[in-house]
Image 1: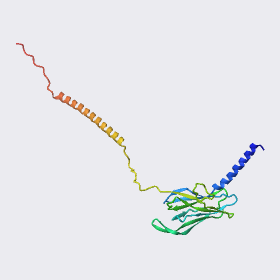
Image 2: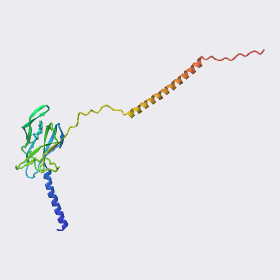
Image 3: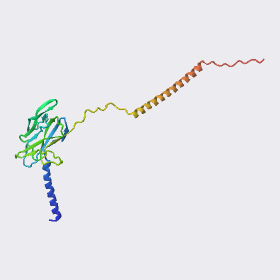
Image 4: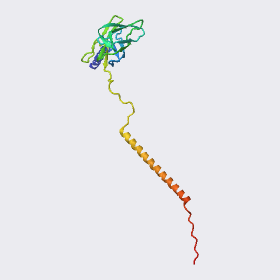
Length: 247
């Protein structure tokens, strides 16, 4: 084998090996959309892909934080899956909408029934409505993915400070501050540009001036015609003087 061919084979092998390592790392449990507004409500979707070739995903557990609890948690049914939401007492009650909150949902578990398990090369989505969202920079949902062969993949690694992705990243929902609502409201009525108003005023004045001149001329003509008619009917008719006899 020539050196060129050998280099090509080695390069292809390295590329395939790199791709094989990269694919499982990217097929982790995620929450979508990735951002929401602090203090609001949001529908989030946990997307769970099957990253194994020889087993099915039969159970998914998502843990909700209790240090920033979510007072409202609603679950959307998924065909072929049972779902259970577990609550826990809060170490420190929090106030939500003026009422104390002493317990909150801390774990949601979806379990496949029948043939609904997530098979190799497939994924499933689980919708949850949550709120009000805390006034923090993010919410971390640690998740556990159970396979039919007993393997449990723990997606529980929190984001790193240096920006690198951990080995088993947990789903993270980024939170942004709500837009300010105490700013004075902008006028909703139509606005008039000062220069346009001046131009419009000048145009109206010119138009009225021209109309006045036209009306004045018309009145003058009518007056002259009336005067001429009056003169023609009332003026005395001059008669020639009688000739005088010569002495």
